[in-house]
Amino acid sequence: MRVLVTGGAGFIGSHVVEKLVEEGFDVVVLDDFSTGREENIALVIDKITLVRGSILDERALRKALSNVEAVIHLAARISVEESLRDPQLYYQVNVEGTRRLLETARGRVNLLVFMSSAAVYGSPIELPIRESHPLHPISPYGETKVLGERIVEKWARENQAAAVVLRLFNAYGPRQEGNPYAGVVVRFLERISRRLPPLIYGDGFQTRDFINVRDVASLIMRVLVKPPEEKGARIYNLGTGRETRIIDLAKLIASLAGLNVEPVHKPARRGDIRRSVACIERIRMETGWKPRISLTTGIGELLSPLST
Image (cartoon, rainbow, N blue to C red; front, top):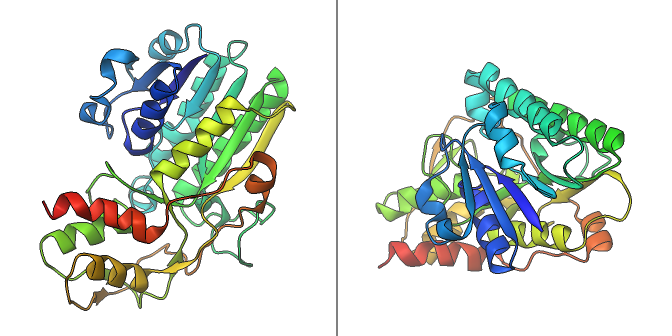
């Protein structure tokens, strides 16, 4: 099977691409390298077809979609903080880019995997969060993912194709970029690597559901190998079902690094959700998938290169 991965040189995309190559898929990567890195796919670059371009570029889209049977759509802007500062960028890439990709894919592709986000839920009214939870995003980023899901659902319905929408919770792992908008795990690791205490915004009692990027890649592989039998879009939460307080995450990282420090607290940030944890009953029941990498194991693997 020939598979297109948009954003395939990014954090999650590169892990998915490596897994696809390992399993013998014919892989096309479309990436404009605005956030992706060529070194992320260095180990497989001679085994894939690389198209340098944006999901907003129709010529690049047509080239990337040539003879493709399935698309894994990961290309997106993904920071809540950045979306508050530049919402127009997020609507252009995440909404218009998705629309153009699917319009070009019309009649060509039988299966689409779309990476959405837990940000579509906003501040949850019940925990754990089920897929039936109302969608009340509180950031432009979350709003663009809601609109992206609607585009995917309409495309799948009109094209009699199968689509899987994955509402990703907090992914972490190797290759996650250390920039101002990076996830909390990489920010804590950066501080710890310099023997500095982690910085926590707020009291640290806010919670998240942290899932290792290798578990994310394994789920996408399972969907490709055994896609939904019914046409249309199927929505799943992609998390672990385990709720972790940010202050406990900071202490875990410091402890595993052998650093005896107390976190430093700063004022809470605008748009920060208080608690979040996925209900993953649907994805377990319908796909048989379950996360396998514990937070302690995953953090330990990230700390190992820092100690060498």
